[in-house]
Image (cartoon, rainbow, N blue to C red):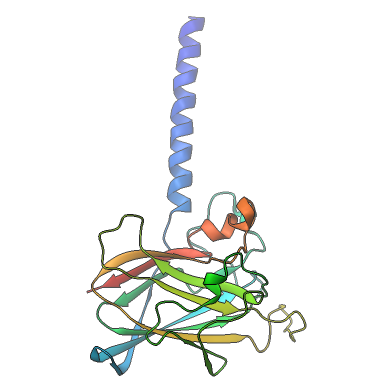
Length: 234
């Protein structure tokens, strides 16, 4: 009887562990509602006149009374993400295929030295540049990076090639801030690129703005915060 009870307890515990792991994976992998790019006209490109779409993203250093934290894609242990940076309004982004897309970023966070200076440069834009506070630049100082927005393919993907990486400059330490601690004059960046055929990609920040794992853990590996899905739809 004792052996039967031990066996039964082991089975129940095993089921609980499996269910728990599945629940954690499901929650941490949940996708927020997607931002859908809006058409704003057409644009002349090396590929001819193409429909032109826009997306707007904000990057915050932390949540506040004015800016709540992401509500989707959050793991059960949300304390790990308390006070961490995130993109808003979503990290799931949907853009049309065979079109020109401009992403406008408003960046409220600080920053510093990025480990790999490759990500201090613009990659994948239509003309190799981005617009930063009204000026066209192809790179920024590697010691003044706040975050990056880096779109890439899944490993060994057979989808159409897509790679886009945009460095988002940091706000200076002496920047004037509002009552929530956000700069009143944040960094504003825009990048324009051309999409190809339909495909589903991932994106993440390449600046070490998290914790654990050389500061690449926490929000940096969490959908809804500093990583997400980038979908090109037909």
